[in-house]
Amino acid sequence: ARSQGNMHIRSSTEVGERKTQVTNAVFRCKDGTYVQLLGETLRLHVQKTVEALGTTQLALFGSEQPKFKEVDWRKATEVVDTIIASKTFDEWLPIFQKHDVWYVRVQRF
Image: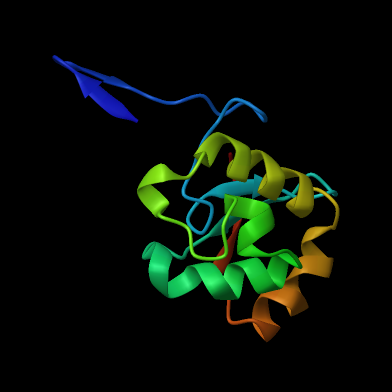
């Protein structure tokens, strides 16, 4: 989201168009349930999140030691959208718990 004068302009929420900090964003699970990842501080949460998702920083960001200011966040978000959509919320629960990924089930979206 960004501000322009008195208006606040939101980024797209459409899959394939949106770009987020993937450790702190809302994603749709296979069963239609939305989950909010709560890792606001990227550097503290990225490795746990990547491991929970069963991927690597190389696959997600293009480097094992990415410079986060240079990451293609649209591509990274699209990858995570696809991964999260591959399992139901109930399937993700034990995975997030095992890897200490902070999350919350979204009640309304």
